[in-house]
Length: 136
Image 1: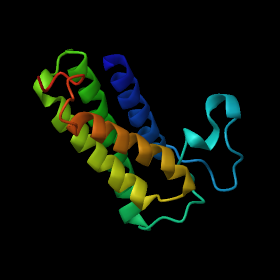
Image 2 (image 1 turned 135 degrees about the vertical axis):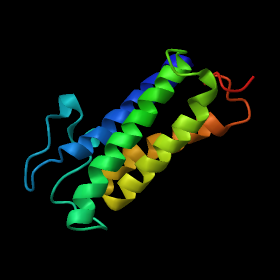
Image 3 (image 1 turned 180 degrees about the horizontal axis):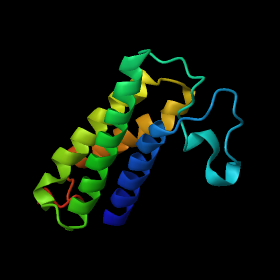
């Protein structure tokens, strides 16, 4: 179960880091064998909720913050460097940044990242969540 959670955390980090290099407007999606737009949900032709300098400031901050929180949570789940007790807090912080980022860039391609956030939050906040190592 731990490996599934770590893989989910790494996928969530990847999905949020793609905000740093959105697909160009009108660009064809990446090939299906690398996931297409499903694993690259950001594009410059997306109608965002925020525009201008606020968008160019928020996007990298939220993308990097959520990815860092998710990667630290993965390290916590694996008991590498980060204390295991921090796993739930890091996951919630990463999901919060990710949710804001996905809502700002809302599009049909934001479904997978939003689902990943929901699944990870349910896994972390469930009463029997022992796979994170934070609850006994």
